[in-house]
Image (tube, rainbow, N blue to C red):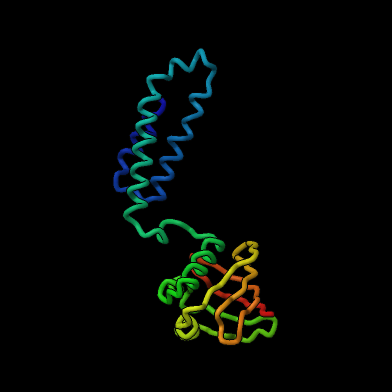
Length: 187
């Protein structure tokens, strides 16, 4: 049985990590090439089809269960865009804890082109946004976005600030699922 080895390997990995489950699922799916044989020969593999489907279904169910029982940030690598979206949601919800959880402990916020550091480190970032989030009218709207490498770049307007609305470009540098640096260009 062609699928037997892959099925056995996968089924014996009951305590497999997500990465190894994906690996064995990939192996099982790679055996799909067996079913691309000419139709006359395909009938010879019909008996293997049911165990293959069962293996794939079991693999998917195990993966879903693993994803359900593990914190998502331990499993998935988030793109800079995903991090920028999460940051925007926390910002607009004025949720300081969720917002700060997206930043590295040594993250830096910097105005450009002056290079002036607005906040360096989690304590300073928390202090800046604690005050800002106390304003119930605070809201940020993203007008355009672009991504390149480790950066998510947004053109945004912040409403509800004491000095009026602020038009800016924010560049989020993301590494290891955390925002490392944010560069602001303000109008």
